Amino acid sequence: MKLDVTIPATDTLASEMGFTNANLDGYFSNHDIYFDTKVLSDKSGQIIDGVIKQVKEKIGINEVTFLPSYNQDLAFEDFQRNRNNIYNELLDAINISDKPKYIKSNIVYSLSYRLSWEPGVIIGESEYNPKNHAYNHHTLLFQHAKKFHRNKPSAIIFVNFPWFGEKISPMGNAKEIFYKNLCEDFFNGYENEPTKKGKMFNRKIHTEISAYDVTKHLSFILFIDDHSILRDANNKNMLKSFAYFSTNAINDISRSSFYSFLKSNTLILNDFVE
Image (tube, rainbow, N blue to C red; front, side, top):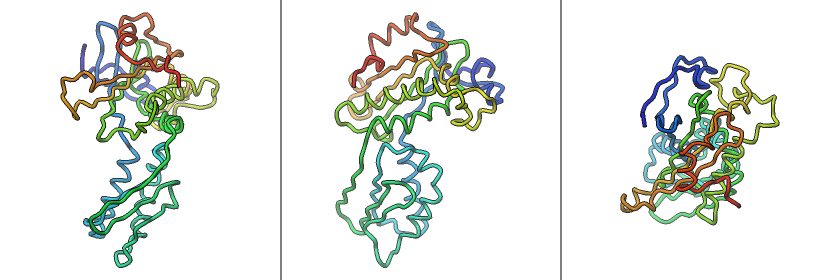
């Protein structure tokens, strides 16, 4: 295996963005597979945490506790594009003399805050649907399109850590449903949408390549849940993996020994029945 590999942009979809080179995290030389690793982070939560921190610094109320609540399956773009408005809305709603205990956002659906001005316990609530969560987040994969190889199998490896990863309900099979639908929405959702272009989902794309053609250049997605920080790092149960293979991939790995390895050691989401 080779790490930190730089190849000509013409070998990947990076050329659709005007780049000269493309850098990937690694190359499985024994299997001829390129890959890039990403953290499956809670982008919505990071944005709201940043807003709260900024508000507290602005008006000097570090002692107050904010508990934000919002449906965890909302699209992160709802928070991203409204970040400044969310900040101004919360800042305007804070009246130190009145000490509000509850603030409801009019900008992002389901977003609210419970405030505690003294030490104590506060409780919030939210709704969650793993399929909605997957649909609202699958477009994130287009942001990594410059890592998709044109002529060789390529993969995105998402690592999900418990302390700042995506907020996925622990109930039932919500995680498997989220992972599977995230992949299906990306790989299969644009097959009959020829007018949708890749640049609709990634502003760096300058060409007219279709969204569907973008998706066909990714061979598979591997999810790794890494809970090793919580217990003994030598416990193999602290790492759990899930794989989804694209049935529309230009460069599939179905005849690769790596495919056989994953089939034997990973939960295959293609076969998962909800």
